Image 1 (spheres, rainbow, N blue to C red):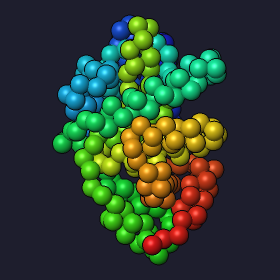
Image 2 (image 1 turned 90 degrees about the vertical axis):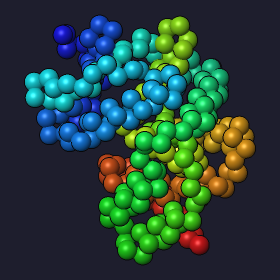
Image 3 (image 1 turned 45 degrees about the vertical axis):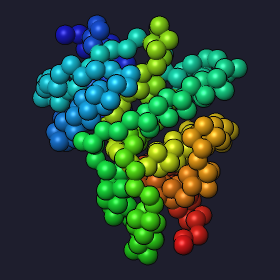
Image 4 (image 1 turned 90 degrees about the horizontal axis):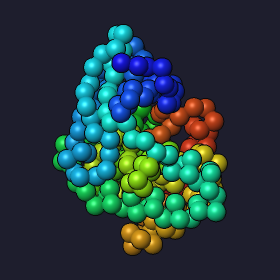
Length: 249
């Protein structure tokens, strides 16, 4: 096993390439339950037939929990957008098509999106009044059971050398309302400073899914609130602006 080739470094994990395998090595203090849940999510998504790296094993390396999956040789959609700005609209079109393909799937074993968001809202530092309004709004939204990624953005799409797209990182996967997933993606574009991309994305998503833009926007304060739990200070300030801007019904 060769852990010399680092692919990515995150706050609580490091991703390595070992030949045709990809090793996601979590920090020693990372929750075992969260690691196993991520692996289980990925295994369940495999069964839907979506193009994703297959899980090979879950193991412990030097006292650190590790998820081993197939290594997909290629470039992320984010990198392709950066390298070929003239093709950004084309890549964005593919991005939306992949998300809609994912939303066409169901996976009964996944956590319910509404349950997760209710829990996250309860964990925020928002006032009791705002939390109550958000819980009420969430409860009023339609219940669906579509596969939702929870972190669907161009860095989590790899285009393999043969042109096949793969969706990565299923740690936040749930089953629920596709418009909540779209609201999350829209906010991710904003958080990345790509406001033009956010607007184009939302227009495309709503057009191709025949969804009213206002309906996706109704999810934004809920999604923004649920994200404040793990965001950094700058992100939390931005997300709070999305929560505050809404007139609650």
